Amino acid sequence: MAPFLALVVGAGLLIWVAVEMAIIGYSNEPPLQAIYAILGVAILMLAVRWLLNVGLPVHSATARPIR
Image (tube, rainbow, N blue to C red):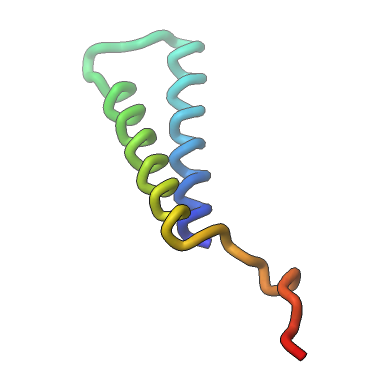
């Protein structure tokens, strides 16, 4: 579940920064919005790469038992 949750965290961080900038505008002093946006993109990119390597999580309740 970790790769999927990392994807959710990265997307959530980008949405949070976008909403913040829409409400209060971009602030240069200190450039925290830019730093957090870059961090969100980095988390999102790493999560996508991680998901491509390990695949999507499979919930054990939906997995078919081997007979």
